[in-house]
Image (cartoon, rainbow, N blue to C red; front, side):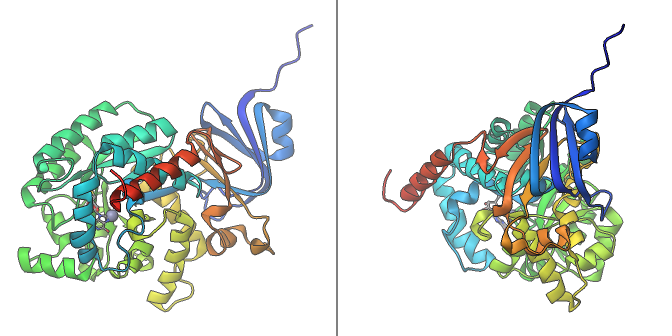
Length: 446
Ligand SMILES: CSC[C@H]1O[C@@H](n2cnc3c(O)ncnc32)[C@H](O)[C@@H]1O
Ligand SMILES: [Zn+2]
């Protein structure tokens, strides 16, 4: 007599009180399980059926939790965690020119970037972020941190037409960045892309070169754009055109372009973004703190433009918690538009997940809980008193949620946060190294 057939094997079966896949929109599964095999989502099905259907290597029970796609931070400068609180309460240009750039000139080196990026990755994982797009000097050090810690990353190497701690000029940055891209060509979790810093630090010749490379090899590009009204006014004075118009003329607005910030927006900017298919990284807390201006996120979304979320660096935020960003985006949109129904909770959650994946060109891999995508997941404990009573888990996530409620995180099926313990990073060591850098920067030690 043939042996009875064994149920199929899965590596991990996660049972959760709620599962919000984000795609399809508005779907909330109750008392279901998510099955993972070879790092990818195999299925979402009722818990009782999952227990019958699969033989699981490991089973996780999340009785008071909602399981969501890991959040996607589309714009940060990870290593700037080490400059958190270094120069607060100043406007963008004073902050950059008088404080941040001199400090970077003095302190930023591969060790600074490695230590600051590790601290950032720890902070992001502990608040439910599984993918980040990073723009900073010594991008090879940040890439290595992502590789070692298991996080998913888009490393956007910085291009500036002036000497920086990492590059002699724009051409040097391009050569170094493209070499790094080659090193990671076959990597499953890490992409290397272009980051011309801003319209006021990169000239037409370099931008045109990037546009050609990007179009030829289908490489994403991200750039600070329209961060303040002053930036737009200066561009009009110097170039006779708005930054969006300049990028459009140079062939740099495309479905691979991520425009970071986008304040001081007029109808013609919206038309160019929509026509070109470019994406926007909305960083509301950095914009508020630096008094940079308001991105009309809700209007851009209504116009059909993909708007995602970013924290910017921890020196202008001052944290890396995307729950805070989603909350701020939802509240700010209401204040700016005068409409309480602007940017509802569902849209804010989509911006922090699937819109982010789309903006980074990785929508086929992550951003929603759909079979075949990587199992990039965050579990959020909604059992606390601040979340009661729970009429609507999506509303609770956006309006009462916080990174502190995240208990467990997986990237490509690998658990990187286990009941708030990081599995690939040593918390005590991170704190010690951050304190050592503070002492060095304050001139207390060498
Ligand atoms: C070229 S590496 C990144 C570069 O950008 C600086 N930076 C940090 N935050 C902002 C911001 O909001 N606008 C413009 N530039 C920013 C960072 O300090 C590095 O120098
Ligand atoms: Zn930035």
